[in-house]
Length: 311
Image 1: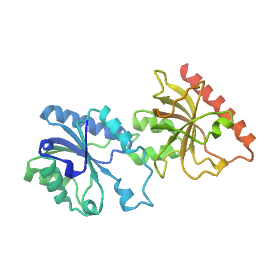
Image 2: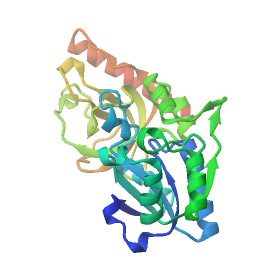
Image 3: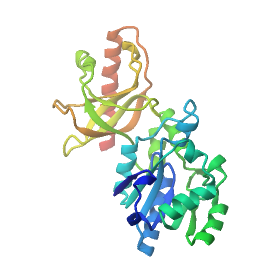
């Protein structure tokens, strides 16, 4: 998969593709429906399959105080799109110029002149351009002018509700990992590189691996039963804490995973942590001994969960 950062890195050789546009945060089942349609169009037309995304997320640029927590960082998103066998991802810098660009100028300047889109696939509620003035009607009219075709993907629903990144965030915030997995088509995972922490877990008898989340907001917090990918051929079972560590006056959000029955030096490894069940919310305890007692209960509950999964 080719990753192209911004329009100035597009060259004549990149012109000509079938494409879709969106943020694809979470790459949930609705996104996957669009990707499958894109792949079919790519095969039928013998054109590369391209996805246009934006960095930062438009809401992060326009309304940072109200912007939702990301379900995945850019690197994680690109990993999923690579696995989906997308040919190229064009990442546009979302700034004032792009935010103020009229919809018809976006079509002409970006889709036609730069990308040479032959066929475009969007959701039926897709909006774009200055003040979100662009819609499928403008795209249909422009397609007749510039010679590209348009397909609209029907809304993907579960229990008569549209699958969306917002719904995934709702499920995660409520600790409903089963619903999140249903919407994503896979367990929700956080990826990252293992770094040195403050070694507090080891002092408490529960050594952990630590992952910097590299985000100001997390869509999920609490204590979880989890699986860790990337430390060998086996999936490692773990108890994971995501939060600010209030017992120690923490300010930033961290992910700490106590891997069960595991004792290896794995600093620097890049891992994926799948969150399977929320055991409890993060909380403050009166004493360190109370915290340790609860950690023992968390481990016992996690082991019971994994044992039930085997049956």
